[in-house]
Image (cartoon, rainbow over all chains, first blue to last red; front, side, top):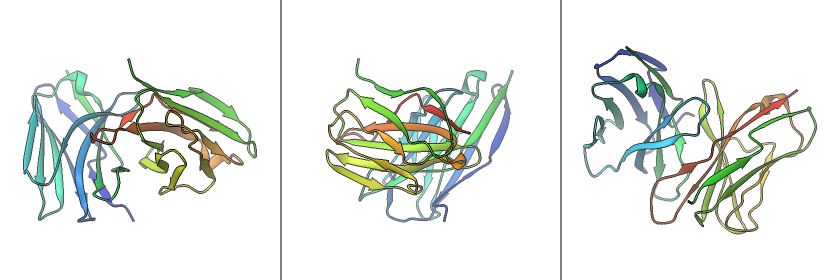
Length: 112
Length: 112
């Protein structure tokens, strides 16, 4: 049973456009929702994260939108750049532990 | 600077052999994790530890074991390597106060 579902699997965006990646979760005990960015040959690195007490968090060009009632959250990348081309993973963890449950990932390509 | 390292970075082994992947972190983090990354599956949790002498099974623990004898290290052992265990393995660590998991550079394991 997949607890965190991520879509789309791949995404191609023009430079300067908006990239949107969506995730849905099932476990209502989840209370921490990070997004990780991974470049080829590297380990994932935390990009931005949110807790369910807020509906939106923005850091530079990256924004997480969170809908608790729908059990969905999304990553928006504004003014997408070729350097943003990477694989993005959403994840979630619950109050009882710190182990993360990851989505399957989205490969983003930003064309110049 | 504090860091998390994995060794070896690449390993080729034969079916049936025992293999141990090393993970070492210098942050003095209590929480350590092992994930495997496969195309189409994202990152899946293998084992994790919340402190010395503590180990827990994750989603895909069959055929793997870990031991935690000190804070800095969490080696992952494949008791009898199988072709299905060909994957990229990532180790991560997390402090007790913050939420962020820090990932190592990964080990690419091929079982022939």
